[in-house]
Length: 379
Image 1: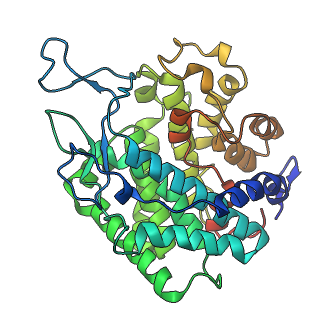
Image 2: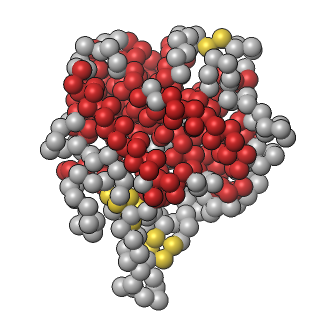
């Protein structure tokens, strides 16, 4: 699986295999656990409903028992995040197992991934309801918000992993159909519920995360109508409204964690460009009338990924020392432009970060799954 570029040839599969297989081997022994194992006592939802509480919301010093107030960038450690942690672990394990299966065709990896998928999407006693009605609630303010939809961005890679399992002996037709039905129901909810419609319109990383999920789920389901709409939205709305002429994202730069948010949004947008590209159009190189492209976004951020000390703004209020990691935007940009310097920088960065917040904002961990989903057999 060879990526042959203008300036170099790089065998991504061979490079990833020594990392992916040990991660998948470790996941073989993991007992699947869904959100039904933990209940948020403050959520009005049921045992099958995902629940989380907004990160940056704290008790009001002026009214300690009243509605919470916002402190941007400062995570309240007392808020409920158990479901989020379970979902992140599930996504990491399924990602490793399905990537390993895709690279080796060893059925044991597929079998373990299928067991995880059954627990989360199929078994009546443990399955997750296909909605996010109670995500990122705020005590004293609301029981859920549209912004909560970002909590499931990690399911994009799960959907691509399920796609890679097609044809595996361990994935019986009934399980595959049930898992597809779950994603079909969730995609419908994203496209029709007020929370989904609200998040779809967001002109920052929330809007890009909505689009990434819709795209990955539509690819799994071969929903060409949704894919066409996502492609149009990327070209006509997401890129024009979010990227400045120099390749930066002004909405992310305005945050108290501008560095981390800029990295996160660039990763999501370049991933969208990869998934939505067609044989006739490479969206990494798609150019607006004023010259803005996703490559320009990588050009803006890459120097600061290589040397964080050059970042022109204040350090992030939290997790400054933990960035960057092996950001997929560098790889996707290198593939698009034949930039060996970006590829070498990608190789040099940590591939499997330990920091929980970085993991949360690192939903593209197994890039071979992303290239495989586009039908690119040579990678």
